[in-house]
Image (cartoon, rainbow, N blue to C red; front, side, top):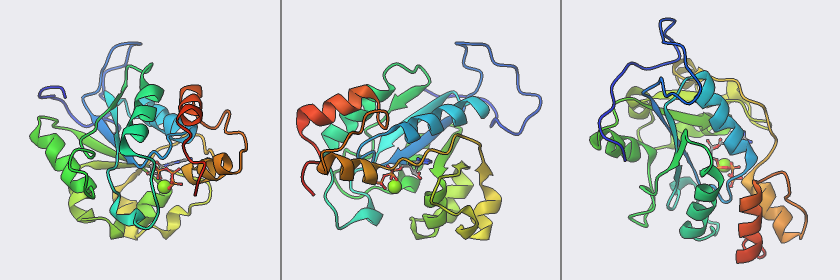
Length: 219
Ligand code: ATP
Ligand code: MG
């Protein structure tokens, strides 16, 4: 984790300095949490487009430990989910991975993660959410605190209806445009189980990893 970072939140300031290729102009780190079971191209294109249009310094992919709202199904081991995310983001200097939610082994809450990151010195933290996550935000721990602690950047997602998100959440979130890819980890798991192709849905490194480790072959 990097030390203290300075600077104003980006995305709403016309006075923001122009970016140059390879030069970080933002000082905002965006948290992008998920089960990433497995990570797919929908995640990556969202992160890239949000990072670019919001001039984020960094997108921090944070695989969830045991997500509280996903009890009742089995997950690929945390180490495997982490390895797939690490492999997928390795070539992108704006992307990084944090295992902060995997340390305790218990359920993880985004508000706790954001507070811990801030305690570690990150001053400006944004949060990237797909539309389905904004719709469900009311069931998360301390959603109002989360909206107060970080700017929420939401992207549309096929099959999700942003208008179903509570009005105050919609008002406080910033809608960021990204290609709408109808890809989900759930479909990928189902396709692997059915011995169908997942080529072009996940990065090659993830596809190879799934094959080598024999992930998702059983329900
Ligand atoms: P699952 O089917 O297991 O729920 P998922 O594809 O939804 O997996 P998650 O790890 O649950 O992936 O998602 C992490 C974050 O990425 C969430 O905020 C989710 O809304 C967002 N996201 C995932 N896939 C897409 C997509 N295709 N387009 C936009 N946002 C997405
Ligand atoms: Mg999901």
